[in-house]
Picture 1 (cartoon, helix red, strand yellow):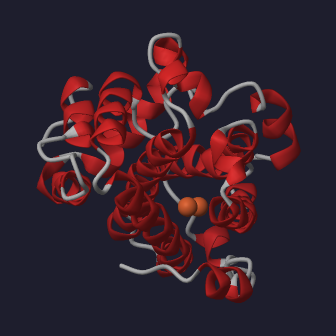
Picture 2: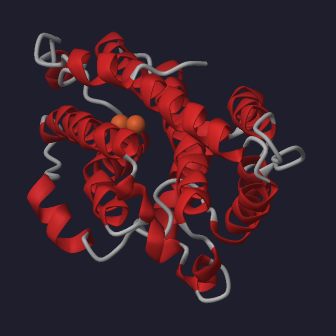
Length: 264
Ligand SMILES: [Fe+2]
Ligand SMILES: [Fe+2]
């Protein structure tokens, strides 16, 4: 899988969402379970700025391709948040970017790594650090795309389905970037492979945990990934990650669901 960073940044546009007929929600509002999940998704999209902030103080910032990608990526994610916030607002739920940004600037994936930071991160320098970052991003973007796909399938709403599929097609580009980078950086680098494996096994949790209340994380995972159809998506994520250099046998996402009691 090749990734053309110039083409990506030049072709990037905010997700097109304003043309959809949101008026249908006035007559046919979305059910509470779906709104709860959408709110979580919206907050996580807005939270992306914290990941950008984390990157700016890590060795990743020194890599021109990663830095370029993350600027455009952050901008696309904020528009995903805006689109979802609009759907929520039609149901009387207000989520705003500025509010969340203020609340959440202190949290991010480096905080998530903090328990292992002392013993581990001090040893991760330069390219190895970036490898961990890229692998982490690959899992999270795949999880996000799977979540949108599942919600579109579960909810019988053509308008919501269209919106979620449009967002998911941008997530597919994010997956391509992180995965291409992770593969290249892990290839022939046993030290990076070992560190990445250890960091993920120790610190990775489903997207949104650590920044959202545990009850909300559990709700979203159960809502979207219970049963065989949901589990199929999760196993596909683990399968893709296991194909990366040194990652064979890693089943992080399925294990996270099992440990939270999400039925397969
Ligand atoms: Fe997104
Ligand atoms: Fe994304």
